[in-house]
Image 1 (tube, one colour):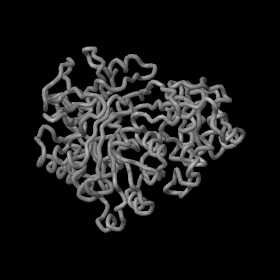
Image 2: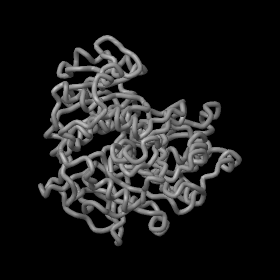
Image 3: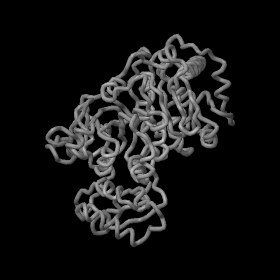
Image 4: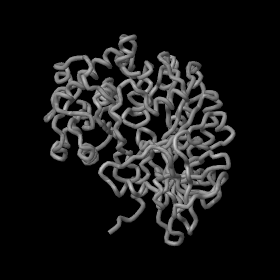
Length: 511
């Protein structure tokens, strides 16, 4: 149930295959390399409960670094490779990392945070060196490939993507359990998706995000091979399923949309019959998109709703979803409560803030105010990820939007996700964001910013067409009054939209 155990039985089996370069990391290499790095951590004085951070692209040794920290009983923070100096420095300093690891590809930003991160005692760089960094390869080569004596389980401490403000570090309790002991996530994955040593798991998203990191490590625990895409490309994803006989995969809805917009002859080129389980999460999926995916891939689409915080887990398979279209599932971990602003629980189909009870507790590292803000106002210990939704009479949850994105126009609550879901499937739309902008009479009005498939079509004609398309499917107050066009929207590689950045452009700065 960990790389060492798999390596002892199948040392030459691929643990990681990089989709672009074709580079293979075997289970023997994963085990030995992570052992060497674990020895380096101990030699540097790090003990269970201490902290490291790393910022890497989807690198062949990304999971080696994660496993080294995990088997050393450390907290480890994987950081987005797209961050700028101030954002990176904030996270590295806030998480109290004693060792920081990066790569030559990211050297410019990695070296720029030295003065702002004085608690970092050692800096290592893969594939080269830079000022202030030692060679990773030379440093680990000096250590043995055998396990450290006090091996125990660590935990990731990941940061929210910052779509609604400063990233928040989610710090779980540290179990320090033996390395071969399975945790709740692996048990859920085994129960729902039945991975085995014969599985091949395709990971098309950045590994620093919670779901790709945790699922890749969980699948490696059972001996599965991970195929890692350096960056998502819709046709390459289909080709990889065909080439490697991928059995399991995990996606976000924007990836579904891009694959569905491939020409039919392109989609038909690839044999997808090996794919037994396609999992999606991270953002609500428009109903027409999911209907088309089930039509295309069959009833193998699985959805879950959870967060980095780990305070709850909802799940729905294709069969139940088709009976409850739009749901994100029913809870398998935690109990769902939908509450009004005072914290009073609402009846089925009434919209409110979604809270979890009876699930794992969490804190936002070093930020008691944000931790308190995530808890219900009546002090029952219920926690929220900030989403608005409702439950039906059978207990299925439907998400309406993020609480921070709700538009109040003329005293009426408008949930922009509804218009986004409609516009996202329009044949001329590549990406879309809907949010509120100032309106003297109504307080806010609904605005759409669209990335068209072709900027040549951007203009008043397409604006009118999109507004009319939305009006044909939604009540007028839910539809955008105007549409602006951009060549690209600020979207996180995991699929989350940095709507705050767009919205701020339309609101006057607060004095």
